[in-house]
Image (cartoon, rainbow over all chains, first blue to last red; front, top):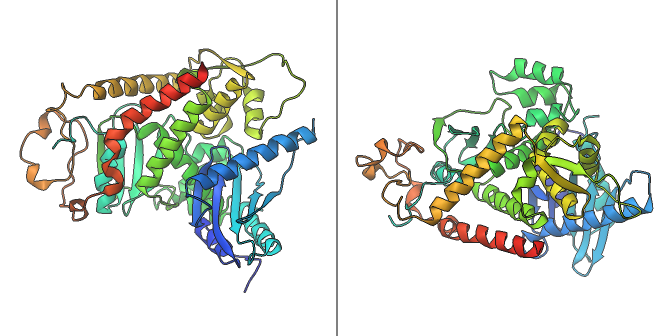
Length: 132
Length: 321
């Protein structure tokens, strides 16, 4: 298995690779300023509609806090991990050159999921979003 | 038919084409103009001059030099391969292009889907950018509705979208946190540009700029000034005024009930009235197999929409008090 995935991927393939992680419930690509779902696979916690809204709310909250923590210095957040009763929620903020607005979101099972593996796979996939 | 008591919205005009699984483009003939591309019954792309298309998202944002875009257009336009040209040249990634395609699609759909306009379906027409991600008509409609709610929740008065953005000259608090996009808006607001103008200038999607400005207005960081006055802002204001008038007439269906038949693909009805007075979508020529099946997910929509809009406004209005 080519873990780092070198080829050119489209969004479906990215989501497919995330869904191949052990213990994954769902994965999606979210445009976080608008809260729109660009693509989704698997399922989200609760109803499908609420997931991106919750994830986006969490990202906004984190960004606001991070910005306060570094006054006068633009904040850089790489990912946000929430450990909840129903699993791990990992939100990876993609920092492509200009379009720093996309977020990869993965929901992992608490018992079966492997957080570190998920974060590595997210890094590999995040690299597919920047041209260089 | 009882439900054909009012002229169809653009999203309703798309239903039969999507249900039939065809490929082509629904061209909007009235202002603001635009096109919705359908591939195998799924929404592939949408564009309108009042929203930001893939070209503007890539070039005006500085992501791609305008020359590089033009070169890709020259090389790929005829074969509908502008996107693949850019990807092959290593200028953008496939994932990035697909994401921008969806962002542009949602932006145009937001402006077009609830308009009552005449439109013409062109079979087999494709967008020159090439194949991007396709979406279900229903998910696009849900997204448009979600965006309308989001905007109304942030700031109820739509006039702010076409009014000059006036950042406060001085803050009453010590410190403020802005998102990157909010920063771009504030840094480029020259006290004349409206959110619509700023979106064009920055190469961002119009909806998100409108949303961020409304959010900042709610927290008191910016306030709406005079109407923007630019052609783009006026175009949006005009379209909205017309849409509002359409909604008002829809609320009184008595006058119109007989006149506007909903252009559903029912071949057996073709001989009688429509041609003379219906400036809407022409009837599809082929009989559509799938059409016979009921569309449960869409059946409830036409009736609930108006009341939903009124409700949203009421809630927003109450919130403002």
